[in-house]
Image (cartoon, rainbow, N blue to C red; front, side, top):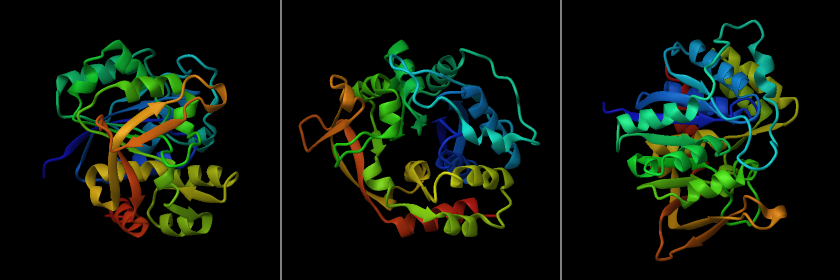
Length: 292
């Protein structure tokens, strides 16, 4: 089996979907997870959560780097990682070398030109800095896959809004294959709290279950934004797609980070997901994470 090498950039620690995405990648037999980087407020806590989850799944050898805690130009909207409360009583790495995340991403991609899929499921600060520091990196990726944007409703989306300037850098880069999965599609993959408890029960992932309970104190349901983006690397027929061009709003303060979609132009640099078979997605997801 030829595995697909993946670098994951995540803001694990807020919405539970990042942890569910990481679990999927750790359990996906076709995935070679070559590294994890964290982004957002308290990036060290986020790295600890990633490390604890890797240990629980028996994958503690994966490189993990604590990344950028503040956006490029605007104040941080995502100051804390509340699911860090689930770390209590668990074994995890407690210290991470500072200021190494972008170098790690850069060195890893340059060591395997044309091979790496970079999966971004958080604000795009780390990836934006990477592309700004080394403008050749986008051309050295095999693929860039993002959970970012909202393309058929002109409203902001969290990952783009938290660091709109980083999002603009990333969307202005030319990558051979660029796929964005936006809220228009991910919101069709939802489960109630009761449904997800029932589906996760008995799988043995105690940390995920504890993180889930932290999330469900504030939300009554889970949307599988990030797991959907990850699954398309391995099972692309779950979604339907369209090609076109993406622009990111930087001029109007109230609209910062809004993603504008122009389909079927001469500049078809990007692919976006436009629809999803949610039943097919959930069947695929739980066939992977529940596999013994």
